[in-house]
Image 1 (spheres, rainbow, N blue to C red):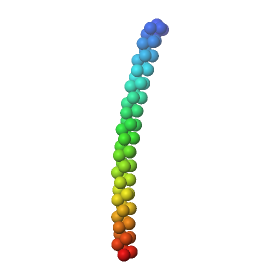
Image 2: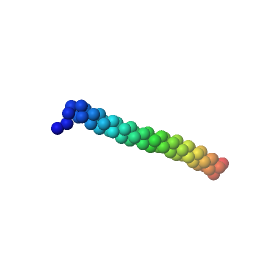
Image 3: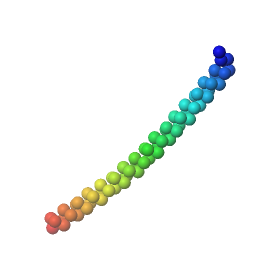
Length: 63
């Protein structure tokens, strides 16, 4: 049977390992979020340009 000190030390190690794992997962999620924000900004910009181009084409054909 484990002593109280051994059990406490083991639980502390397990907690530290879980914390490290969660921090790694959180970092991955943050990187994915940042990538999605960048992609969203780029797509929004492309959509805006496409809309402007469509308006110019429409104005050219109307006039």
